[in-house]
Image 1 (cartoon, one colour):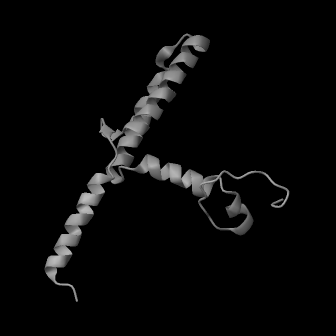
Image 2: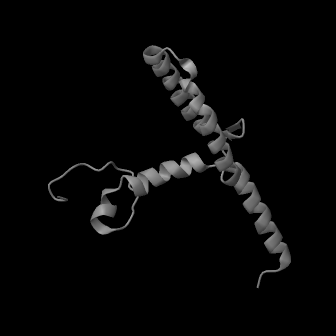
Image 3: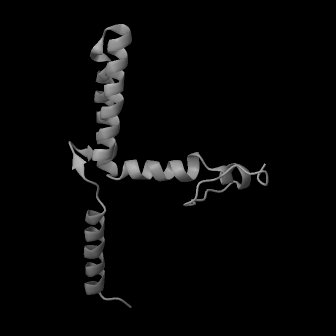
Length: 115
């Protein structure tokens, strides 16, 4: 049976491991989320200015930043988790066929066997 010293050491190791996996943050959200929001806002500014002569379409990024910041308070790695969910759950041919999710490092090729 483990004594209390072993449990305290285990908790310390887990905190260190969590700190090592934390993504780089800027403005309270991960840089990957900030880049996505910035790119989306810049595209909307260009779209709004070219077609409607109104550059304020880019203000859509402010609510997106707020939602990302709220989400980052709960889980800092939410962008990586969403990417993993996209690879396993959202675009998975095996789920439609077998009703289960899998992750494969190889891209699926269309073949006549799986039709």
